[in-house]
Length: 255
Image 1 (cartoon, one colour):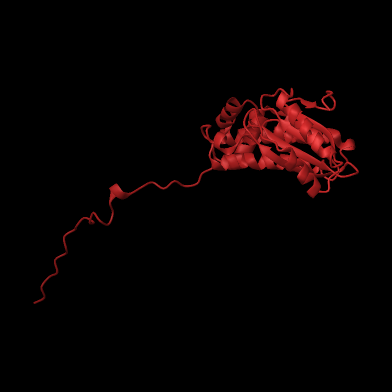
Image 2 (cartoon, helix red, strand yellow):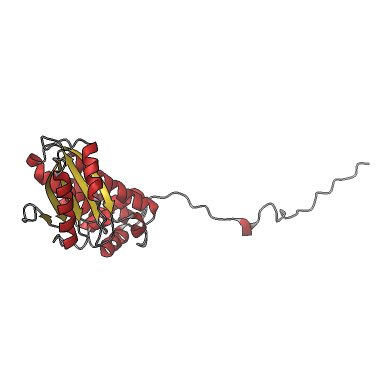
């Protein structure tokens, strides 16, 4: 006689096979909310139709920040950057450690801002290098303002010219503090000899925004002029760059 098979009793699945305590939701990629997409599209359309002049500073910053934070609401970050630094140019020119002080700004944001700054400097520089300074003087002034006007510390640069007054080199000689930069006339003239330059234009910025020369600025300029002239190198000018205006030593009677 065959013994009937008794069905096994139902048993619950063991805890180790499916532990609800260990389950974690997985964040899936998602598009930004529709209101952010619409806002971004509106800004892009305004930019392409009217250019940067049709947009306030914080909106132009928003367009840059979208590249670093494609799913975030960047308007508060853009506004915070303007509030912190004062205007668009100072935001773009700010050093990375200072940018990271602003809430919402990470390294990816800082990198995007520094790329924009580098592109602006390179474009401005291309308009003056290997060109006669006399015929492109406005471009030289624009270049100096682009690279120096919004810095938070002083920077000293020298523009080296050949016998035809063509700009052959633009070099940073020194960086300093908010109100001082160390300059060594001997090094300036030595570099001119290495480049076979025939003339110089000195440029430095005043972070205060006021381009009025200090006694130290005047003394240093005279030292460089005397050292250069002893070697038949002419000092054409010394420009002090303020926030929105510059001062020419020659135009102001200091040379």
